Image (cartoon, rainbow, N blue to C red; front, side, top):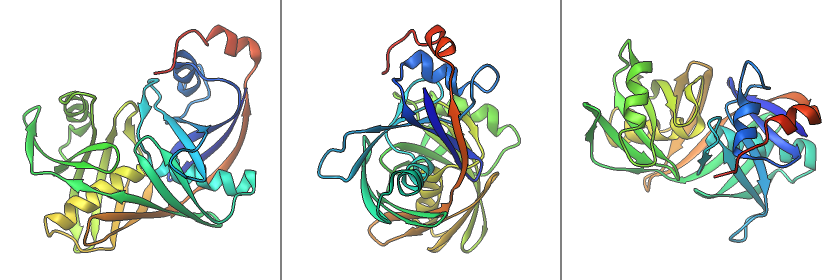
Length: 257
């Protein structure tokens, strides 16, 4: 079983190059103590709806994510670097088809429309719900105990949600901390960057383009008048990982989904 490993500002993913995944195996591979360690696994799948490529995104807990901004950027980078894809193409995900443009180690993704809903209270906290093909709940303010608040909000809705805590630090800059559904504290998140930028623009707290500063670094998001968001940032390839068959066999029990 073989993977290619890359990261986008500390948000690391494994692209499956050879082998078959199960839920149990996803959890084992992503484990940072007894496995390889990863924020998720990117599985190439047949494209749908006329897209050039297809992608399934596995969270470290074995669940499936509809869409991932950094995951898409890493997958696009891998397609160009390792599979000879053209510089621009489309990728189908369960959260919608996106367009990717790869320029060396810089990858831009047109993530689609960010739909911001009226604020609501989850787990006793006021959040701004956003859907970017996957669900988000943006909290204005970064409390000291945000890592404790994040999972409570994550589980407060059916199907769970990604959670972001933000501070508006300039007319075009947002500082964000991310609690990712199925992964926990995450150094950076592309779809989260899109969500917080969309909320900031909707609230009139920032203007596009938006600089989103996270623990792992900076992503740039352009928010159009219709809510369409474009995500831009770096990807760094790390190398390949090959797993021993005996290790895989011991950890493969369990189904995907």
